[in-house]
Length: 412
Image (cartoon, rainbow, N blue to C red):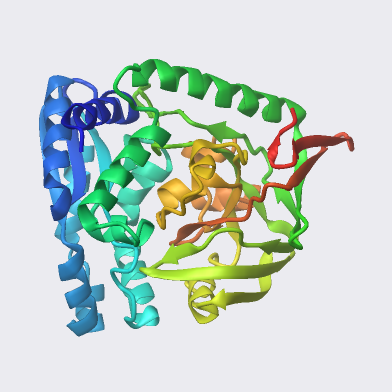
């Protein structure tokens, strides 16, 4: 791994992705295997003026041991101090910003009880809901990135020796994240976000009532949009006025569906990793916003577990447009990581919608968001449905039909 590029990646993530502001506490979530990268980001954070950098390490192998052998009731008992460990920083002078570094083994929980995994994860999400609201409502700057681990690299490139697989995945991540030895990532991302912002603004100007997805694989899905919806993409702005990029990489322009106005059939076009296991070849049928039938070539029962997580899990909270020419898709690689794979294709998300995808949503109550049609759930799981032949049309509130995508590419 090129150390210079690694530090360049870390600097860009901290200064532009998170956009650490002077006086803030900078919280980094990081697997123990990626401690070296957390240190690089911590250095960049202090150089950007952070009052302090707090690193919270996770251990995926220990998590598997606990999930396999631990008592479900004990694992689901999330103590209040964990929530306070976040809120104390968020509520303190100077505020907080956060970075999540993913370096996961896609099959870390393979073979374990999917129901137990789901219930324990839902209990943790529910316990941390007040902190989750800070990121879901863009009250703080937040960013999610990924770096390779041997287990992840082996899953992506099983034919390569371990060291070569890791090196190859590093190079690919640098490439799709627009980081190389000669360029200025800040300038590259300014140009990229400007392009995505232009598409966002065109979509908002159309005042759409719904969008329809069609593909030769059998997808024919009409997604009614939430009342007062607004399209978003690339950069967001936190309560303190700081711009940040929630996901690196990102190629999507997205908005909130209306939770009761989704109808038709949609086919999955890329495998999806859920709780460490792959769901492949899925088909889902919606009526009045709710999933009424589903199947999958692999792990259909797991898909059923996902959709039954809570009352909102069988509805969608996000619809996102991604061109087939995105760098992630052009790479031809399945990353087995949603952060990357969702940016290879148009996608929908089962579960919660983002409040910021309706006008004024970040200050609305849950009841007000539901009234606009924004879905509520403890989960938010992105699944890829875009294809190279996909056609997307929009129906405006005035009754006109507009072509948005043709053959998988922007047509606006």
